[in-house]
Image 1 (cartoon, rainbow, N blue to C red):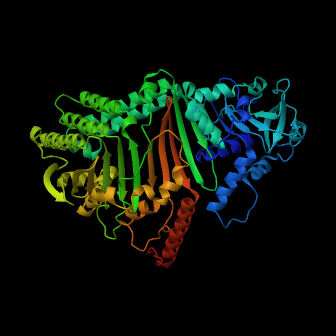
Image 2: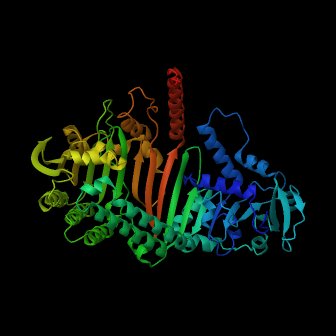
Image 3: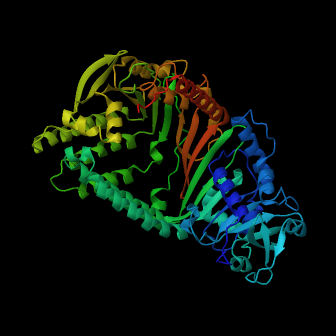
Amino acid sequence: MTDRQTRRFPLATVLTTVALILAGLANPARAQDKAPGILDQIPQGAAMFAFVGNCDQADAELNRFVKAIEPNQTNDQGLLDMMLEEVGAKNGFNRKGGMAVVMPQFNPMLFNPMAAQPPQILVIVPVTDYAAFEGNFKELTDESAPAGVKAVNMKGDTVFMKPQGDYAVLSNSGALLANYQPGNNATGLLKQAGALGTHAVQTGDLAVYIDWTQVGPIVQPLFAALMMQAQQQIAQQPMNQTMPGGAEAQKAMMRIYAQAFTAYIRDTQALLLVGHMSGQGAGLSIVSQFKPGSPSAKTMSLKPSGPLTFNRLPDQPYIMAMALDNQAFPWDAMKKMFNELASALPADSPMSDVLKTYNKGIDAAALSKQIQFAWYNTPSDSQGPVPMDFAYVYTSGQPGKVRQLMQQYFVELNDAVSAITKETDQPNPMGISYLLESATIAGQKVDKMSLKMDFPEQTRQQAMNDPGAAMVMGMMGEGFQGYVGQSNDALLMTMCNRDNTSLMKELIGVPSASSNLEKQAGITRYRAALPPHRILEGYMRIGELIETFAGQMAPSDQPKMPDGTPPVAFSASSHESGLNFHILMPTDTINAIGKMSQTTEGAAFEESQARPIRVRPE
C-alpha cells in the first residue's frame, strides 16, 4: 500500500454491502421502547452511517426472508455467520449487540468500487470480550499506527482497531480511528430525524442515516450538471421537433425540478432509509425530515383529515388501487408550480395556456375530501394498446361543484389544445380533441367524454426513434373515452381506451352493493403494516401488471403468478414536518415472482435448445 493511513479491508466492504441490502427492506411491524444503543457510539457530526440495532435479530429476519425466496437452498449457515467467517472474526463477537458503519465525512467515492482512494470509514463492532475479538487477527508492526491503536492483518489487509467500552472500533485510517470518540447523542440524532424517522428507527432492524445538511450541498452540483446535460439533449428528441413549445416546456420543467431539489437541500436536515424484514414481507421506508420553520416544512406540514378508504370502488380484480387524502395534499404548491412553468415559457408558446388549464383540475381535486382510484384488470391476448379501465371517485360534500370544475377543466383544456392548431402552421401535433355529450347510465345523467388521439403520420414515424414516446402512443392507442357523473356525495369518473359503460354502472351502484374494494383481503391484511399518519395508500398486484403489459408482446401461454398472490403495498405519511415513503413487498409475492422468473428462464432455455444451429458458410 502506498497510503499507510487509508486502506481497504474486507470487513468494511462486507458490512457496508449488508447495510445497503438491508436498507432496501423495511416493514415497521415491531415497536421498541427506545433507540438502539449503538446510536450513542456514533461520533458527533458524522455525515452518514448505517447501523443494525440487534445483529442476531436482524440476521434471523434476513435468513427467514432468504429462506422464503430460496426454499431449496441447502446451506443453513446464516448470513451473519458467513460474514464473520469471511473476515475471520469467530471469537468475542456479541451477536445481541448493535453494529454500525460510519462515514464521518461524505465522499461520493463510496459508490465507486474502482476508486484509487477509498473513503475513510469506521466500523463499530459489538464484543463480549475485546481481547478475544482482537485475538482473531495477527498483530502487525506498523509505524503509521497512532498511540492506542493496533494494526492487524485481516484476510491480507491491514486494519486499525482499538477498544471502546463494549465495542471494538475498526478503520482503514489510523488517524481517523485515533481521534474517534463516541457521541453519546442518540437523543439528538432521533430529534433530528423527527417523529416519523424516530418511529421508523424504533420499529426497524437497520437504518441508513444521512445528515443532509452535509451531504446535500455535495450532491447538488452533481445534480445540476445532470440537469444541464439533459436540457441540452431535449431539443434533439424527435417528439420535441414536432410539438410546438415542447422543448421549451420540458426545459422549463427541468428548471423547476432543479429549483425544487435546491429547496430540498436547503430545508432538509435528515434523510433515513430504514429497513426491516419479517415472515410477513420486506420493504423500504424513506424518511425526509425538514428543518422546523423552513419553507419546505411549512409546505409539507400535511395533516391527514381521516382514514383512507376504498369503499366507493367496485370489488373487481385490479392492477393498482390508491386512495389520496386531498385535504392533506399541497395542491396550492402544485398550482404554483404549473403557474411558474407556464410563465417560464415564451409568451407566444401555446403550451402555456395548456398548462394553466391544469389548475382547474387541481381545483376540482382540492375541493374533494379523498380521491379513490383503481386500474382494473382487463387482460387481453391480442396485441395492441394496453387495456386500461380507470375508475376515479372524488368524495365530497359538494359533488355538483366538483363536477362543474371538472367540466370547465375539460372544456378549457380542449380549447387550449385546439389553439395549437390555430396558432401554428402545422396540424395539431398530438391530434387531441375533447368531446362532451350527455348520456344516461343506471338512471343517472352523466357526461360522456371522448379524448381522441389522432397522431399525424410524421409524429408516429418520429416516435419510432423515441422509446418513451412510442410507449405512450402504444398505451393510449386512438385515445380514451369515459364518463363523468355523481352519486350521493361523490363525483364519479371513468377513463378507458375502449367502451366500458359497465364500469360506470358499477361505480354508480357501489353504495348499495354488498361488496367494495375496501373489503379485499390484500388490502385489509397489509394495511396494518403501513406507517401511521398516511396521506396516500396504495396496492399494486405485480402479476396482473406483468400480464397486462407482457400480454401485448408475448404468447398467451406465458407463465403466470398464482391466483391470490398478495399485492405490494405502499404509502406516504406526513407528520411534524416529515415525510415517509414506504413500500412493503409480501414474502409470498417475492416467492411467486421468483418462481415465475425461474419458469420463464427454463422455458427460454428449452426454446433456445430446440432452435436449429446455423452454420456460417465458408
